[in-house]
Length: 124
Image (cartoon, rainbow, N blue to C red):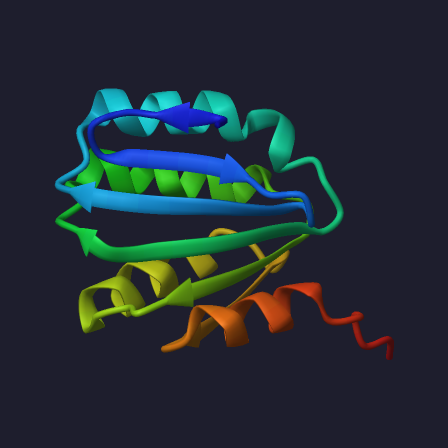
């Protein structure tokens, strides 16, 4: 377990996938703790992040700024978002503006998301 707060759980599995689960509205304190724990992870190339926002609530503007800062410092990441609602698409698109180092895909099925995260990267 990398992080457990009232609104965020962050764990890494044996395959190197970091799973982020959100519950309810996120506080700025939980967001800053997430930022602290993510700091060494964003240096990976690639970071494989499986985000599950299905039980998550709203992220106020100051929390979205923390998300933006995390994204801006991320070197190279694949982010699979499972079960996203329209609100999550909006927030993810705002975060994408922070960097060109993130590739975000949306999935309804967690197994499909994991396959995408673990698939070999295509080279140009």
